[in-house]
Image (cartoon, rainbow, N blue to C red; front, side):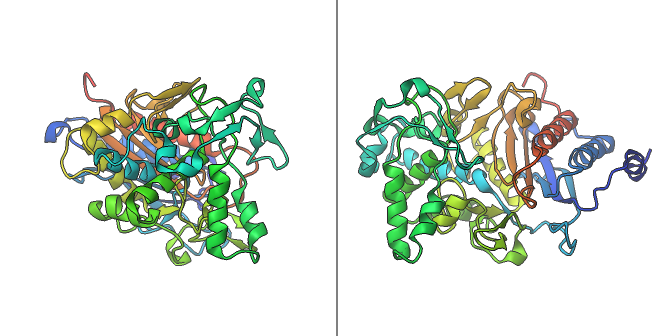
Length: 431
């Protein structure tokens, strides 16, 4: 059955779906392995995307790139604006990378570790003295349910934690005891007109430095924007540059990734995201993350925009570093340490900056090899590197176009996409 007939038989309406991309795998040892995906396999990837994404009003990009440009999948579909269908997705479309930005912050910091200017087990307060001191364990506001609070360790509430003992390793592995999130953007909105932009930024930083803890450091894993904001501040303090400058000089410029940059960028280049009532406009070319927006669109946890192709090129540089390639942002041993299990809570496994392959069958990474590592973004993006398959793939979406409430459709879509890719590209024998 032809693909179009298959779609018609399934009653699929995917005319709204925006997709652009490619997927590649590096030949192991520089040679063809005989494991190239067939046309049928590639159609399976496409079919999985179109079937599972049905009902998600998003733009999607799936891409891969490596130093030998061995492409497995490259295609474009649909529209970035499902309401007007006036903007088809292009290979040059820049998506809001959301929390995938954390990887760039982490890599920038690790370049400083390689230079001997910082240490993984160094107390954060040695670089950021403002973060020192004792403060209590307390619940923090739920980012998805206004008015509700999340208590990670209710039995420990009120206990005092010495922030001066928290290390960069704990920040990067999301085990530092910090809350996942704080409503910094609301403070920024309250201060608008009362303080200069510089004063408001300073006050936001002071709020982060003084944030209460959510649990005893090292006791569990809580994915934390606050921790990566602190890592970003450390990069700025150690380099004397802004985070925008440090990421460009240490990562994107050396790798030739001109399309990966912090916002704001022209809306004509970007995939639009959510309509924000408090801004009175749909976000387009501006950081969707409210707290990143409060920091001017440049923050350690979010703020970058990029294309699927260039994000995959970044992933391929990391894969290459782990494989011992030259001209990579980090050394092999550094990437090995970053992709080693550093902290775990249930099915959540963390390296340094990276999420590691999860044993949860619902997770995107479940279908990949044990050695896989990557990151997700709240706007719907994903980057995964699977060393056993010599594979890098990216999926970027604007799944928040119609808001963040309602049924979770992105999780099964991601899982189905990863399964189709994993079936298309099996691991090397013995990997």
